[in-house]
Image 1 (cartoon, rainbow, N blue to C red):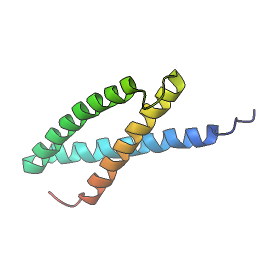
Image 2 (cartoon, rainbow, N blue to C red):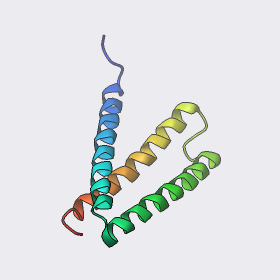
Image 3 (spheres, helix red, strand yellow):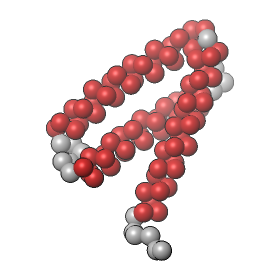
Length: 99
């Protein structure tokens, strides 16, 4: 069955997000498990980022930044989290050798 236009791009975006998320989980887990100052800092950063993301995303949804239809809102939320995960992955990969 042929796919609709854009479905391939959506599938790629989902797979890319999943891959980035797995990398972030792996890198953060390793840094936190190593302990020390860097591990504590990473754990604190992780929690503060999650709280800030929830607050910011709620504001985006309430203000209509991602539209008002369920589809547009879901797409906006997905893009929001994909951007945040990608940034975390880049930060963690850049500091991979640091402790």
